[in-house]
Length: 487
Image (cartoon, rainbow, N blue to C red; front, top):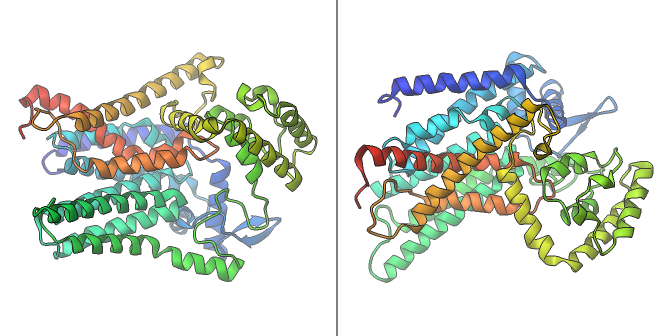
């Protein structure tokens, strides 16, 4: 791929690096989460303790998985503790490698002869990937390892079709997939969704083979079904293996069974605001409310005027306002107040179960996929009110349109692939649609259960989105160049 189109990939790489360096110079991001990761990495490197600094003491912690702190610690070991600029440069380079992996994934899964180049151009020029490459957050590493895992699985499945399943290269693909998924899990606990998606897809492949053998024909040539079963076991074992020492460490050091990390990233002695978060899920649907309310508790008063109307509707409007007023007196979320929020949530869920279990999760998913991805940039989260500087409003609209182009192009490509009848001419054919689509659907459904709809959580799906968008635009090019692709 690179040898045949050296000049294109060179210029596209330079454009991608220039875009990322622009964000590096003007909008590097260090958030509260970033400071926690930096503290973990620094203490781990300097004192050999994986823990947070509290009141001048280093306290062992299990609130965050060790993947991203290990990345920061490795950079700090080479370039000096606290060298954030070096960490961001490393992320930029890793993000450009991820663009190449996405291009290779497109080459393997899209029949268009130009899909790899289109995918690389879309990925390298994607402002969302570039923006998060210059933030001390987990997204760049998670996107990279997700792309590697998907590419390795696809390469392994291709090898099964072409070989007897015994070649070393085939098993290297499965090992690479397991290692990449394991890295995803160590970076973020929701990386396990990728393992579930791969396992589900391999189960479907095995089921098709079994059904094919029942009627006297194989649904897939090449290696026997036992090879696919062994591959699935290998992927799972390698992916979950790194969690064993982490679990043992947590049990021995913290005396708790914690194979991943707490859902709310709280320390063992901290109150997990389960009741408050459940109440939030009875009305939260958009990112603006995350900044206005969710992130401010505890420590800041809740402004009831900024809550959407559905947060204060019946039943329990007066009790809701009373509970908010009680919290605002101390701005501390005590166990008693958390229980009051939990009781409110239970009453609201019983009154409107359809809204809680269907409508709000769907709205949160839509918000995460479709809103402008400017949370690390100056535009106000309530961008649609256009109360800020006109340039910031224009930036929000531009980012929203760019995101819409990516998503709509991907949806059209998938829709065409799914609805095309057999024998109809087509410009582009998508392979392994179930693998990539299953991951996107599973992750989106999981994100709908969260109380904080942050659009960055959908970026892990962007390797699939970029491949499908490349299929759409590549199909347009192929249609002009050579007409439909025959069966």
